[in-house]
Image 1: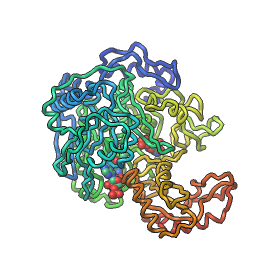
Image 2: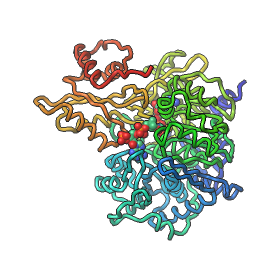
Image 3: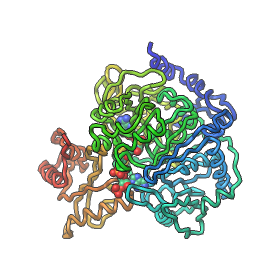
Length: 634
Ligand code: COA
Ligand code: AMP
């Protein structure tokens, strides 16, 4: 039997002993005597009486075990031309001082701390400092607007906020402090302290009573020790998009996360302690939490924290430079990054300037990987390119290939086979299993393995309602797809209003709420249209109030600005068009899927329940005026 198959089968038939064995590979202050508590399903608890600390496992353990002088973090900024190495010992000093700074500001175990930072080492150090004292961090991505930050402040009620003075986007300094001030003004909850990391590129003015100069406070702080917490103590909350505008606060617990993330580093990514590992993402996303910060540090790797883009900083050779300069063994990024590189350097000519011989694997995730991109990456890099599928909710991959166990044959278009602990099925609406090759809802039989989300912050009912209601006894991933005759999984589309823009998960429902708030908009729909670079981009269809005689172009510009101002530039909402009516079913449901097929130029059938088929001609014409369907390069 294949090594993967026997391991996977054991993780399903003998899950408790499988994960208890994996648990022996991490440091516990108190080793768990119970592996899984199933008494309150679907709120499963792994290792419920274990006690540990994530920061200890990520930092101190390596200092104690002979890795003190090894580089823990390489900070490489393509926007400031700076490259800096931080050893595990230096990391321990910084983390304990910042943890002390927080403690002296009144933060104790269980308090929430928001981290609103650009891609600088202090972002990772801040997360670890929270974990050190049992504070629960919630990182908010820098590309979100003040309003989104305010929603998160009110939901998780942070005692303190750690923020950078600015972020650096190519050609643009993003001032974080005014966004932070505005968010706190909008929010009902007020933090006690905001520690501002002053960057040289733009210093923030410290105007609020709660503002603290981070560098000064850190220099005066006494170091704090690690606080052992219960395995089920939340390590962090990470907000992600759901069907409605209100983001979901995905909770990650401590013990399960350390066990599962540590396990993945060798088994999935094939790296050993000491190897250089690079996840080219942002700490604001789950990939950043798991694979820029926690997993590589749990495993004693050197992690690369890159501030820059795949192209334009300064050219499409940016990734190859980082790989060669830092001897990266594994790169993990989103397909969109490779589409961007391919678009600017289709023949991969920039590669000739660099030695990337240390690279063993490229891992891709965050969105469906189109076969062209995967094959192109394989051809230019000459290493295995592994698509793997995962979600904020799961914290690591649901399906992958297993570089450290057994590399299964790659099928282009499939993220291969389920990771241990994931009993995956494709189900029809009535709950019956789909035949191989037939598309259904992708679900996982409960319980989910360790490291997955035990609940949603402040919203246990929403946890049950959103994920466990439609298919009792199963976690509903929100993705649709199929399983082929060989057991390979194919993830095809979301079943809800979530879209994926440049690997960023966004809610069309949230955008519709913003558009509907425009005084001239009577009705609207936002759909994710296929985009050759970003995978999908949002397109807004607007119906104006009757009697509105303002210029349609002006209104479109205003709603575009409104989404940027209220959700943030990351939404990449740049296309809106006015139509006289939206296509609907006779019961009034907007036919978004049909409009999306028209925008994508894919085949579609006239829905039997449509109230007025003629409207689709107008939709087709209107979409054509804004460039849909997109013309491909070929
Ligand atoms: N702070 C402030 N603004 C940000 C930001 C941040 N941290 N990150 C992105 N933005 C802004 C960008 O400046 C851009 O603004 P603009 O409309 O003024 O140009 C907008 O948000 C969209 O950003 P992005 O999605 O990054 O698009 P892009 O056109 O700048 O770059 C890619 C396109 C493909 C190069 C880029 O999306 C990329 O590198 N993606 C990698 C995917 C990734 O990391 N995914 C994470 C999951 S693995
Ligand atoms: P996020 O929670 O931001 O990581 O987004 C998770 C969603 O991204 C999933 O539910 C999928 O829709 C999509 N996704 C992530 N990885 C893949 C993949 N390898 N293939 C297809 N879709 C993916």
